[in-house]
Amino acid sequence: MPDHAFLFRAPAEARGIRLPLVAGALPPGLRGTLLRNGPGVQHAGRTPVHFLDGYATVASARFEDDGVTLNVRHVDLPLARREQAAGRLLGRRPFTNRPGGRLANLGRMQLSTGAAHEVYAWAGSVVAADVDGHYLLDARTLETRGPAPINALGGGLAQLSPMPRLDPHSGNLVAYVMKPGVLGSDTVTFVEFDDQWRERARVQRSLGVKGALLHDLVATEHHYLVVQFGLLSVPRAAAGGMVVLDAVGLPPGSARVLVVPRRGDGPILAMPLPDGFQGFHLANAWEEDGRLVADTTVYQGQLDFDPLNPPGLGRGGPMPGATKDPGGPWLCRHVLDLSSGAHQVTMHRQAAGEAPCVREDLTGRRTRYAWVSAPGTPGDEPVRNAYYWYHGVAKLDAETGTTASLWDAGPRVYVTAPQFVARGAAEDDGWLLAWTHDAAGDRGELVVLDAADPAAGPLARLALPASLPPASHVGWIAG
Image (cartoon, rainbow, N blue to C red):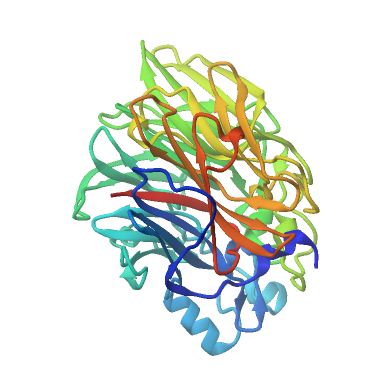
């Protein structure tokens, strides 16, 4: 079996497992819970599904004075129960069609959140994004409590935000829902929830296009920012002959960061990527001196998700126009003059990595550094651009446009996106936590790195009872 095939193994659940320390020492003061979410079960009954369409598996590692405790739980998804009982895939997924060909998938276009993707803490619960919405989990045991209130925003053809964000300016959780236009253009609605899930703000805007596909978001003091990564050809997707996300195109101007005023009726501003570039994630954004600055990660070429198909799942080839190995991902800085609308974009090709995080208490405020999952030394994976198969963790410097420090774990060790945990007052004074899989020994670990200099290697390594498949994203609960 190739090393990279660990991606398709469903993990066993684990409850209250104490993790042995195999190297180094746990840093004093590191207290809290590391979270991860990603596709864990990639079969709906007898139907294999694309990696990004698998049911969510959430893990937590709680750091306390006397050690670290692991929990791993599959989200108790009503859809999963129905499909496993039926023994087959019941609905069309963004990357997987139902068995039965074109007619079985004709017109079935529900996207929901699109992936078992994000995990975050809100209103006393852990919240996991799964294939058909967000679900509340017990913060200590990860037992599924039920649907999250945020799901009320979605339904039908609406696209619910897969990655809500905490806004330090308001103290609210910010999410969006994108609704396709029937006669007019698509619309996006941003909604803010307080810590009791009460709605505190709502802003709706027309996107001026049809088929917009949105992903990451961040809030600055006066604006919401959301990434549009392409345009969906609705007729091609609805015809059922290809998976929905294979109908995504990248015409000029369709990959952009949208800037939406939080108050008033001001127009949407757009920060387009150069033609042929595509992006999904925001590291951070802030406003200063009449300008808006945003750091994103981008690819040169349209990303092909075909290599994330499990064995036995036919998909009819990669999406039209996709690039097997696009350049990047690289850090990219946008500067937008809020008065004139003038936009400047700079590619930092010496700062490589994906799934960026910053120091969380600086979200929406000026930052210099971002920490990413980095390619490192390639292994046997079929493409280098899918960060589920990355081999390192890097600290990127957005001011110099360089990789300031890189921990390269080697070609047979796979490393998730890192989580920054603050220690002192300086922006880079903290720890990085990441989940790893060592293919040589077929073992999983949890590693702790110095955020100021990841290249120095792990401060501590803890053994997992079994490897976990790659995480989509990670999170942290302090204390």
